[in-house]
Image 1: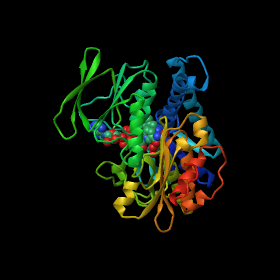
Image 2: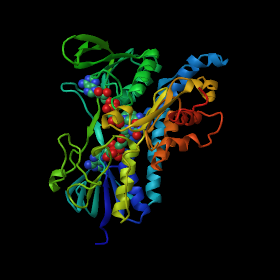
Image 3: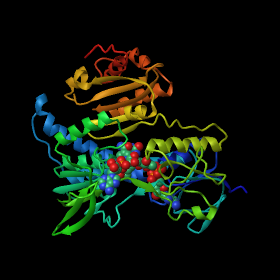
Image 4: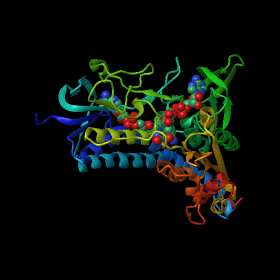
Amino acid sequence: MSDQYDVIVIGGGPGGYNCAIRSGQLGLKVACIESRKTLGGTCLNVGCIPSKALLHSTEMLETANKDFAGMGLTGEVGFDLPKMMAAKEKTVSGLTSGIEFLFKKNKVEHINGLGTIIDANTVEVDGKKLSTKNIVIATGSEVATLPGLEIDEKKIVSSTGALELKSVPAKLLVIGGGVIGLELGSVWRRLGAEVTVVEYLDHIMPGMDGEVQKQALRIFKKQKMKFELGRKVMAVEKSGKGLKVKTEASAGGKEKDIDADVVLVCIGRRPFTANLGLENVGVATDKRGFVETRHFTTNVAGIYAVGDCTHGPMLAHKAEDEGVAVAEIIAGKAGHVNYDVIPGVVYTAPEIASVGKTEEDLKEAGIPYKKGKFAFAANSRARANHQTDGFVKILAHEETDEILGAHMIGAHVGDLIAEVALAMEFKAASEDIARTCHAHPTITEAVRQAAMDVEGWTMQS
Ligand code: FAD
Ligand code: NAI
């Protein structure tokens, strides 16, 4: 059968499009089916990219109006919301069409439509049956909501609606103090909204290093973001032109109503596999709907799953790495993802970044460790840049000195984390970073000084 594909990838997000491109590079006959008009999935269309575009413009606005005077720069900067949104859209469309180009370059056939698995070798799109040796499920995730709370994307919004509000709400209530709540909460706070975050737990950013969580909370509060920790939302009711958010303590009781103009629901995302036909072939999912895999393969031979629709962190680069690994496995190579070294970044100001184990993880696992820490207040470049909030922390094994994790909060730490991730991939010791020459004056020196501190010889604080 000459028109048979080697691989059909269902979903054109970071998991799917990278799998398709790598498959094309490896000489496989590949098609990528995407139901959206544009490629790039959640990440490019309604996730990473539009959120980072708005985070960048609003951070510039806040820096100009709050920090410029201290550097001898004068004048106030205003904003034009429709133009800011148009600039964001331009970035998104440039990048989504860039993937079209990469598909052509790597001989990936792009099929626009909803893909349904008919059997282990057949996928149907718009009534047309396509024959394939392998299927990769890369259908991503969708927003999770609370029972009884209907997202209309105008007053009660998910991240998608929060990326395209037509005006700045006077009061924005954010349900969930995780990554989306802090990033998009920051965007609208900087534009003038009063932002209140209601978080079920008694801390923000679950899973992050405890010290980073505490310092981040202090900084966000200083920025005038309000927090209601240990509190859950029971209902959202219409109240005149606005909304009344009914909350109570997570443990029960202590009811409190909070007024809002817009409510952002960001309590996590769930796998998206609707209309995919998993039941036609018996692909197993867990109780929460995640496709079960073992080394990327589902329980059905020849059907793989990558990215948000399967287990692991819901991050674009994790989806990308899994997509690449699957393409390589199908091409007969050894595809691999090192789940111990997947960095995570929260793109607030300051940024928050993490890789590997937290102190809490190490204590729980009984792994003996040493810790090195260095504050940006002692870094010359951070001081010259007036960006002294935060620190770098490096954790290394007590006996072997192997780096086990790094946790940072501060300007540009989303970029600094890559150095530690690379070191960890090479199983480096903290001393390897401590003895690597870092350019002066750069904020990268904070990473070196933190590594020196693991052995107690920090020289700049
Ligand atoms: P997706 O990107 O969700 O792509 C899946 C695609 O499959 C979708 O386009 C969907 O239309 C398509 N599809 C589904 N079913 C079918 C079907 N049956 N047929 C055809 N097509 C189908 N991650 C980061 O690492 N960094 C960030 O800064 C970041 N920011 C984010 C900000 C927001 C607001 C959100 C919501 C998410 C963010 N993420 C970020 C998470 C990131 O977007 C996801 O982890 C990533 O997109 C997952 O990639 P994926 O390929 O698994 O799925
Ligand atoms: P999240 O898992 O980061 O945070 C959800 C928060 O909501 C948690 O703190 C949780 O305790 C809280 N919560 C859950 N139920 C609640 C309730 N009933 N009431 C109050 N609080 C409640 O999920 P989020 O922010 O929705 O993001 C979804 C995914 O998107 C994340 O997994 C993340 O990986 C990804 N993402 C990544 C980004 C990045 O890498 N910079 C940016 C944005 C999203």
